Structures are given as C-alpha cells and as structure tokens.
Length: 100
Image (cartoon, rainbow, N blue to C red; front, side):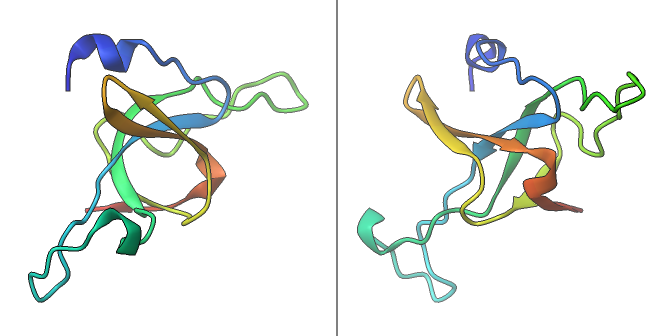
C-alpha cells in the first residue's frame, strides 16, 4: 500500500481505519466469486484516532495500534475505497479482538 493512501484518512475520536483482508479461497482451496464471498471480518489497522473524549474532558487511549491484525464485527463500520483498495472505518467498540 502506498504511504499517501494511508495518510489520506485521519480517523477522529475512537474510530479506526482497517485495510480489509479478503479471503478468496475456501479451506479446501476452491476459489470463490465475489458474489459468493462473505463480508470480510478481519484486517490490518492502518490508522487510529486520538481516542474518545470522556465526560471529564480526558481522552481514552485506544486498545489497538497501527499494524495490529484485528477481527471486527461482520456488519460494522463504513466501507470506503481509495486507489482501488478497500478500507473500513470502524468504531473501536466494533473490534472484537486482536489476532496474535
């Protein structure tokens, strides 16, 4: 991915930009057409926002960082395309876990 693409999106609050990783094969190695594929549920964190502002005025620190591989809610976030690549802007609460 080009550096300019990642710099084009600066998430706000507790939002995270994830580069979507698409699986095109089944576990058995069969290639699937786009129409048969499920919506991807994991990807790599490209950018993170500064954190949500609490009622006290303080910011919360996000639990994910740039470069983390994450699992996210199936229908969460807003999908965008930049330079032909798919990205998802999601709230941190829609991230289910970090893949080790």
